[in-house]
Length: 316
Ligand SMILES: *[C@@H]1O[C@H](CO)[C@@H](O)[C@H](O)[C@H]1NC(C)=O
Ligand SMILES: *[C@@H]1O[C@H](CO)[C@@H](O)[C@H](O)[C@H]1NC(C)=O
Ligand SMILES: *[C@@H]1O[C@H](CO)[C@@H](O)[C@H](O)[C@H]1NC(C)=O
Ligand SMILES: *[C@@H]1O[C@H](CO)[C@@H](O)[C@H](O)[C@H]1NC(C)=O
Image (tube, rainbow, N blue to C red; front, top):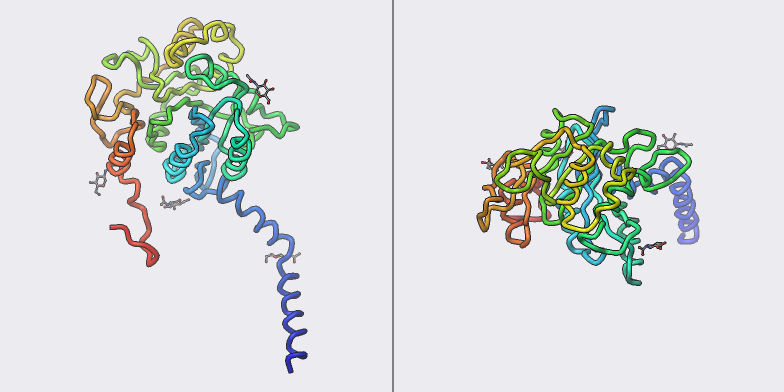
């Protein structure tokens, strides 16, 4: 009897395999790509609405970090990957200079394969000696949309110009609430815009002086200007946010300015002239230097309220 059944099982298996036709196979092999970068799932770092109309705002949120800060990147992916956004497409990317260690070449490459959210600039790691300049001035070439190059533009829609309407430099201890950010951007110009939390802290005039490094945003034309102008090239050393403001002043750029204070502020404790209470109309909270501060902030903004009930877990 066994000798008769075995061939049947074998044939059944062959039929099953054959029925997984090419279409389905392609679906299977695309699965990882879809779930991590391009689907409309709100678990993905690339936050896409279901429909992506032409007039959606495209934003690059670049966060300078160091290659070895694996845990911080993991944490921030969790923070931004769980936010959903409508009316905009926001790419969150981590930015650092040349890798320096053997293990980084393996681990960072694996992260890129998994998340495709890393930009490696041609520079040596530094805080206030031009990394910000290298970041902004490298973007136009990285995201140039000539069809023959298969460059880093994979996450932005190739062929569209500008690749991003706005580019942000954000700190890794800043919590951005992406939907609120988009709401504040919708009425603003898409050219010659400089947006952020104006320094000094008591000032409410965005033309005096510059936007805090916690997170500032410029329109794409300013990114291109930074690449082309001689002004930033000759003025690289110093606190990155301050010299950024000085470039724009000297180059007479950023005639459209938006002071996002008090949508953006430093965490309330310890209180200073730069802090504000957590409140619903928040775009960004800065100086989240401890786990405790992150947790308080995330709790305040009810980030886990959409957790679906399940028999698989119980969270009191
Ligand atoms: C492959 O499978 C899909 C989905 O089951 C089906 O729509 C399609 O017609 C099949 N293609 C071929 C060539 O059999
Ligand atoms: C960074 O790495 C690239 C490629 O490995 C190399 O060509 C370049 O000289 C390096 N730049 C610096 C500043 O070390
Ligand atoms: C968080 O949820 C509570 C309870 O539903 C609500 O009262 C509060 O306004 C929410 N906070 C924010 C910032 O949305
Ligand atoms: C996830 O996104 C879908 C649409 O893509 C939406 O219907 C759903 O409510 C979102 N879920 C959460 C938890 O935000």
